[in-house]
Length: 153
Image (cartoon, rainbow, N blue to C red; front, side, top):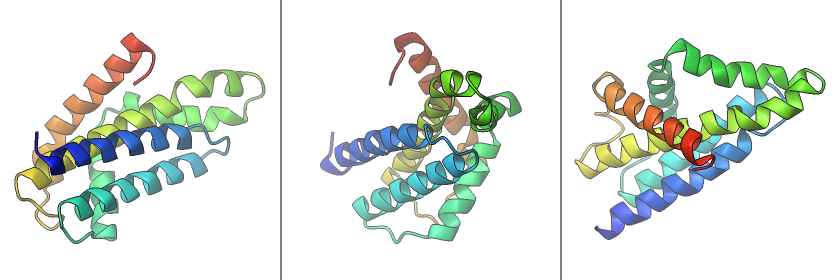
């Protein structure tokens, strides 16, 4: 495996863990905003690793496009876990098992999609979320299923 690819995979793994931690934030909506910030930072690091100029606004747009391809039930798991944090007793006991896993799986999948794109010579300008949505969804489902089997990433 080449050095750039190896470094890129390390970046994705590191930021996946950061996203998981951000998913534990106890304030609804702030957790989602923080996870998005983690994802943007990951894209910035990946771009730098491939000597590609980072486009923050384009990155936000791409993240939104990719996440919107996930099924409503999958996305709602993350949104519900964010909102349920305010419910006494139930929230603190339930959320640690949902939001962090969804945040980590989404972040990991975004990272893998971008590694593939950058490895093939792509940039932020020519990234097409529609063309990568199936690959993104398959990566997400795979990561989510693995977390269910293993209990952790």
